[in-house]
Length: 473
Ligand SMILES: [Zn+2]
Image 1 (tube, helix red, strand yellow):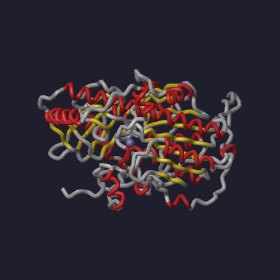
Image 2 (cartoon, helix red, strand yellow):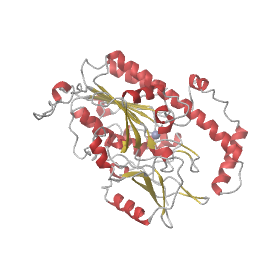
Image 3 (cartoon, rainbow, N blue to C red):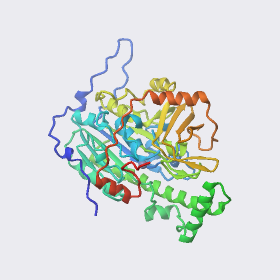
Image 4 (tube, rainbow, N blue to C red):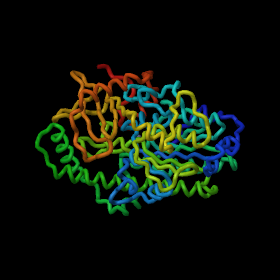
């Protein structure tokens, strides 16, 4: 049985006075000759749904051939969809920490695999809502997101999971109970982190049936796949058919889990609607990273910085959000936090970037700036050689990513298209490699390698994560 992991600090939240959003929003000053723009209703609820491991092209709204996401697609139709949205990294820790702090992984410090955690010195989006008197809560189904790492900061209530990948019903039930405790008109910031479609893939019977999911491969099949995969990595001859069958089966399982996540969002919307109209509710749906299916030699995520694992959905609905809009400029979802604070009429905490993803002029200006991506190590495949870099630095200029991998014995670099899974990998130009290094040298890095607690380290190892204390080298 699971026990919730609650932020101890959150329990002690005082009954802080709060200002109704209608009063918190200063009326716009409009010059005499300008017609007043229609004022959107004030925001008194902000809901962020992070669907773990959701690659953008898994949604119908992003072009999936077999659409399993009617709820998210309908949200996109009624709101604003960002066609080219990047996560900061390709696995949960660094990317989700970026969502909650607005910072890049080297800046917030949760790079991972070496006992790092989120710096208490960086701003917290949740804490900004909390300081403004809003009730804040997070219900998280991913067990590696532990409050000990700093994820729980700013949340009155943080409920994670001890040692299992909770199905969506668990965080939804907890969120529903928490919403029922809210006073009428009390503003709140709700963060829900679903773990479908993260592996291990265990789609519901309903979604498995809906996608006519074939039976899983036998142990013998999996052994053949593993052998073929190892040969492929080594650059030796292998059975392509075994690999193709296995990847096809994994893709179907993944799609079924995406369908489950979509059903969960449908249910959450229903809970919210039962409380009243959503005309004062800002809703954001995004992901921390995507998933690779051998497009570039690896399965899963957290190994590389290709579009399959860093191009994520971002959909916004609510007051001040243009309905039926598709934004084509490149954006970063780490800037979602400051955007939501601004739309809710809450001042940004010191150190949080000024950003409004809904402002077209601002987005245009940002196209001149690179977007940065980061991985603590991951993997690097080159000519049949599998290397483990100390760090991978990605820089997106226009639509091109330059990735610089710091590898013992000599750095590697390559470039590819940021949003095109079909694009080929090219040699990076020295100018772009130098600029990537220069951009990362400007960052104010935070490094906290205090060891994880024995309890957390044991939990992570039990989940199959070789994280925690730095191994002697
Ligand atoms: Zn994740």
